[in-house]
Length: 464
Ligand code: LLP
Image (cartoon, rainbow, N blue to C red):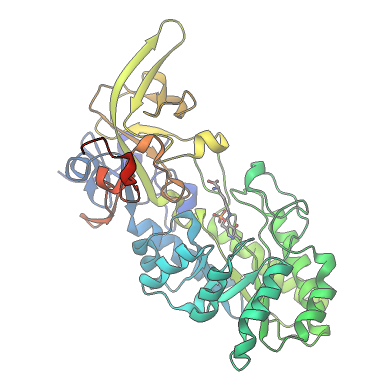
């Protein structure tokens, strides 16, 4: 049977892009999504076959969409920025070895926020010279590891700065590369938990302290302050806050020059949003990059500052739309005159975003793609918690137990925030491309769940 594009065949609203250069963050399904008869196909693999082979819940990651997003960021910078630039993947969105290896092979650097993320990226073969280590409370051990490895450390506060001076004082011939994270005082409209650029944030230095910071650093030969960083928040659809940020950051850059510091890099953070529902309308990757480049170029011209090396660190917009989560439908319950609940075999442990941020997702039935949408139901998870609802109001066709329910745009902050709540094993993840499916994360087993448990001898059942 020939694959046909979802757009043509189903007439549904959840369409992957079929235009010439689609921006992955603007579509609910991965770019390779197609219809094959009644079935949804991604990366040339039909969903029913994937779940038959790998079980459910299953994260299905489309390699092509992820690579496209990486390329669009890189190409947009090459096109719109005449000086050096680097895109680093904010791996908190989804940190695992395969994902690190893919983004690394596309020429991206990586942003890590813990020793664990750093270790994973190293194991995946990424090079420390394009690694940036963030975090507002890095432990001494984490800092030690970062210094040894030789990645750039994005310093968040005075304690960290002073700890780094101590750690590196034995090694003045190889100064530690640092950036300073500052809170730019820029407001943007997103969920409160994911706003970071306003002054009342736990992250970063107050720009009021810049003179003190630059003075201090200029007296520390162990520290090589190469750049300045800011990140204003996540899932942002407006371009204005980032444009405003460019002006603010160039002012900081100018100040550094006055202290004779070799600060030549500006890291503008991430934050570009993706489409989770039809009403979401994020700018394309290219539009976002263009606004930032133009902003930096204009501000540098105006303030007579040499163009810095420009760094951006997107997470969600690189990987969010590249993945779907496939579940099996289980029990159903109809509360007369109120609603029908359809339960899936996962929920808040594999996608904690709905319960944490009231995030809204869309779903479809991957083995009934042509069936008309006849009902609005609540898709509930299997955890012992009333709030474990994957989708409050999902429009679905007639759905039976055993059907495959797919939730779209689950690539970012799903696996990376997954838990074992209710001792539910974390799902497997499979990478699809050109009809091939490769396991990138094994499904956890019950044995994995008790791997770290210790049962002191005195608690063993008598006679055991
Ligand atoms: N850089 C820094 C310093 C960050 O803190 C973040 C995200 C990023 C880059 C990447 O931002 P993105 O391009 O992904 O928007 N768990 C929340 C999102 C938390 C974002 C944390 N920082 C969620 O599920 O919506």
